[in-house]
Length: 414
Image 1 (spheres, rainbow, N blue to C red):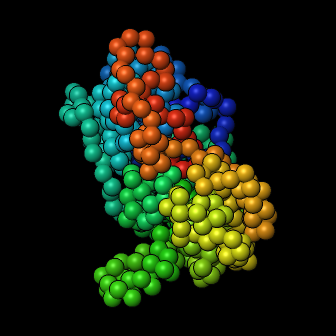
Image 2 (cartoon, rainbow, N blue to C red):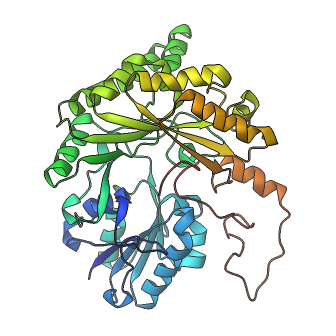
Image 3 (cartoon, rainbow, N blue to C red):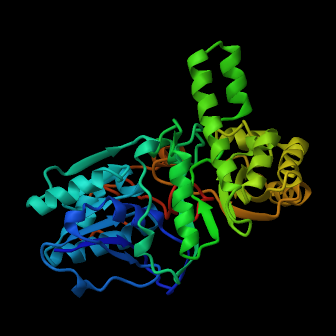
């Protein structure tokens, strides 16, 4: 019996930019009784069906963008007599779909650090004991370090390390706060440092801090807690912030030729002390979700805590002044956009002096507020018992999901 962990992809290039972290974390979560799992990242090379034997366990993680290929892999594995288990962001949102279209034996919803081991143990004992394993949202102290010893070292440009899960915001285009929660769950800094040192020892200098939001506590959060005399909340937020600074202080002790990159909210531009700590920690840059350059655009995506106009330009310029480069991400296609929006957005990106900029189209990703709005605006389609097309309605939603990208938003890379 072998355990296979598959990162599905329709395209295999032989090399990849960033490591699919979940693959190596679930390798660490695989019980030793099952032996070392076989890891297949199909962005590098596709799985060989004949490598799957009857009685094997095949774990497949899917986001919306690779779900169809993931279901195809699952059907292949089940035909060969393997146990088929799904997890990941899309399976968490639409577990029924994994059964109906991917022939799943079971689905893990939420975090897999603990739940995956339970599924494997049950399969070793004879069969999954439940169709849905609730991984939930585990504490940061339970986050697992990845099994980087199982990684082909010459196949990835960037490694990835996670320091925190969850985001306090509720942006309309993002599913992170729906799946990972709005309560930041922070991993102890020493665990993070140990994993980074391990990566350095095997040759990695470039590391993505694959966090939902690297700036989980803002100065505004602290001020409001004080004004409300909410002592418990203030102590909680202060402890999270202190842990962030401890982490960055330890990162600063690592070799200076290391390069870190993360994603963060624009509010960090108000916090010079935090940006200085990032610079000293060799966090050279961050993706900042600007989204829109007008107040009405920001309100449309529930992100009116961002600045607009001249204040936006000054806020973004602050990052560079403190030595942190910005990848500014802008969304086109908001309901408030007008023909003049395009030129105004580009002009603002230039004025703000962002190092890089990306302009993406608004897409209502499953699990988001925008998807729910889009879904309600579409008429229900009659059910058909025959000749269901590949783009058939999702069993979980009853309507056609649009083509979507992985993870949470238009900004986030696979």
